[in-house]
Amino acid sequence: MAAVPPERPLLFLYEPGWAIGGTEAADPVHAGHVLRALQDVAAGHHARFVYGGAIVPGVYTRLRNEADWDGVALGRAAQDPLLLTEALDELTTPQ
Image 1 (cartoon, one colour):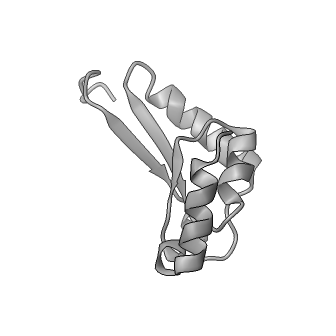
Image 2 (cartoon, rainbow, N blue to C red):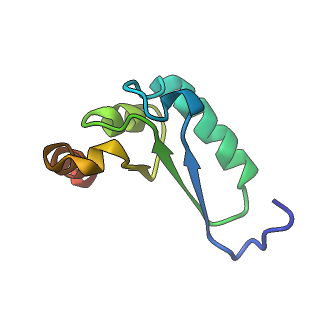
Image 3 (cartoon, rainbow, N blue to C red):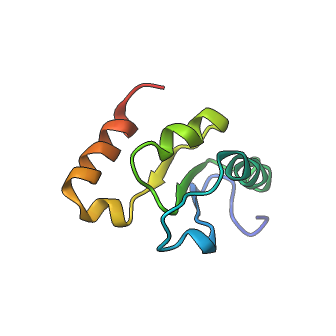
């Protein structure tokens, strides 16, 4: 991280390789451990952290119950109008 000036904003997207194209998101505890490790790496920088990987309605809430994610990256759910609407409703519901 020394090569990135601290004033430059960063965005981290964590998507487990096995979740790409899969039907199961990461266990929230596992994802929380990864998030905290990424936060440690990015200490001193303005950084945001999003999770990707098998995002369907309910995943963001489960992840947020374990760790302070900034959001999710919608893949397949963004292609289905009903899933997209439900996922966006979940993202905009106060925690």
